[in-house]
Image (cartoon, rainbow, N blue to C red; front, side):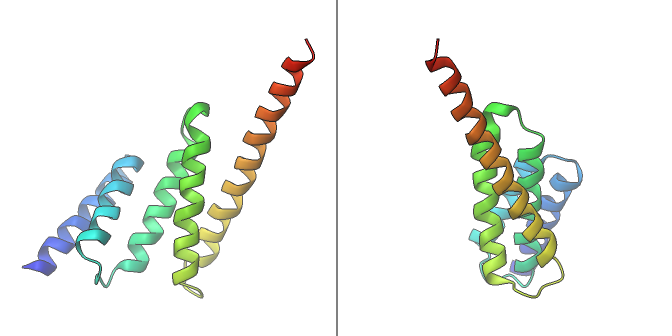
Length: 120
């Protein structure tokens, strides 16, 4: 029975992901890891969490991007630390690198906006 509940939770998270409901997918898959920490799908679950959160950040309004890219960096670090050499490792590494670049550009842009306003 427990395996069926785990599979149902996984399928639900993937369904949200396929429907491009990335925030719901991230939450659902995160809850799956809390409820079923011994899951055999841990690598795929963490991969989909990182990818869904990255896509959520990419498609977010500017005001929410910084927070969501920080979450993506955390999720990607979690995956990269646990699954070295996996088939999705390079893709998650690219999510991490792109998120770090976006965070730098967001913080640099904010810094430049503040310094431009200070000279008035």
